[in-house]
Image (cartoon, rainbow, N blue to C red; front, side, top):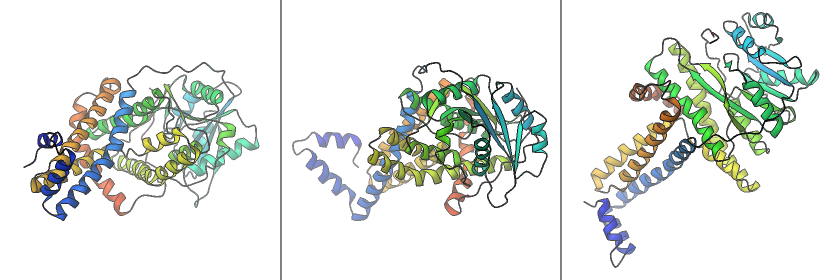
Length: 428
């Protein structure tokens, strides 16, 4: 049996690395064993990239917040795409209207609605435009329709996009709009999810994973001076920037795709930490599963298609920010990353038992500590107040709940937009 200590001692002997390599080769015993170990080390190396990125982002998020210079408030238009949102849209619109000035506009796109969404929105005083198109469905098409409406009337300096089921905290609209106008770049507010009134154990873990993805990691990138990624709501765009790309698509994660298109075009996203937009995790189990399926299937599809594109553009344009965005995007959903690490460790343990070579196990153990450090530091700094320590005990059950979702992606990934059933939205 050859231990890690033996490897270190061998490397210090007279023959040095030649002895180490010869012993390593002999210990494999057969070409098949050598192949197994090579595969395991390759998997370990590939996992190291997202694990290291996650750890760096979570640690950097502990640094003091960068202060942005104050900027004058521009004229803005808030677009709210809505599909069958009559149940909860009025509290959302009332909260937005309270933040607007007389020269601002609130435009609701009632998109393929079969309920009273349009009437409920008009009752608040918002401008409502209705769109019916059974073939071209999805948020991207609705937003494109709204932009056409603004272009035909009086285009604002800044467009803000808010989902119809999200509450905007006071001051958020002004901060992100002013930052977008001052920098000429897209700006993303902090977008978090609250647990439903009767939470299940997986809801707490889901909220923690959402917090790490949408609050902790973007803050880490911001502290390091790098751009982030749009997260779907609470987004502000200078009018010329948003009109430079097409939104008309049925992409199930249109915000992530928009991030990539704008970043490559020279408009990477800024994160605005002193803001907050709050969504609500669905109460119904079927709705929660549908929501997570759309988000994570879309995330994985974007990862597979856009990371190579970003790397290519980073080389061609000689831009470090595109490389950083590619690395950030390479981090899969946290639950999937933990699953992949656990599976790799299990395979390494089995191979170690057969070959008595434990190097892959040692390296994967180090990666496991890196993962744990990233999650714990994020929770201690940002989630301990709202998410008690018992939340972490529900992680294994959350992972089991997510397994069918990833199996479904391997068999038949979701590619079409499907609306998540809503619970009632109440102003808090």
